[in-house]
Image 1: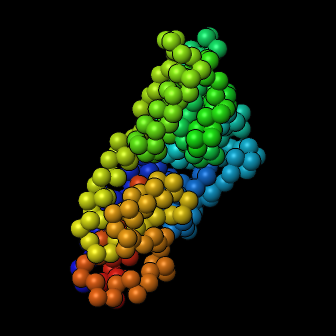
Image 2: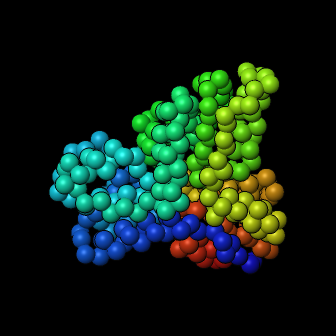
Length: 290
């Protein structure tokens, strides 16, 4: 049986940068705090916590003083930086540059919307770490659009600026944009309405959809490696499943089932932007021995 690992799967730039920053700090320090899971992959988090990384939540963060805390790729709202300053916390800021750029765009749009009484919308997963950081750029006033029914929270008589969480799908953003345009026409017929939709999806993430579809077509069985908390992982897993019914989701080697590989000649292994290459290689080695 031949086992192939997808060459484009694995950490995106932002996640890789955060993990490398943590490893560098842990070389010289016995411990390093991290605000939230450094990556949405339980196995990788366990590897780093074994080396001294301590995962904390925001309530625990507020109680810390005189220490180092890593900010992961998802980014943080302004409040986090203010608390760090007040508590003499040294921040190891590993926020993804693409996320930081988006935060600045949203803050700038928010200031303009304040002047004209408009609204900032963010197409994203409610409660997601990146989204919380984006909403924080608007003094927590931005409206998060996760599902179609969330559109009911919008005032379609006021100016609108729409942005997207960087890891959402292009098709999803296009659909939400069209639904908003339809609502605007219903509320404001024959009026030149002030609505701007900003495509702020990371192409390094979105381009993987097509690449994974091609990869999934080429193999009899697909093993998709991802942490269950990864929204990007669940989306890309569904992409693979849509073109290859024999696609199975695993988080670690213990979840492999030998029944999946009976009478199979080739297996493809791929993963999310939060999936470490070493884990895919480990899984590949075990499958090869089955």
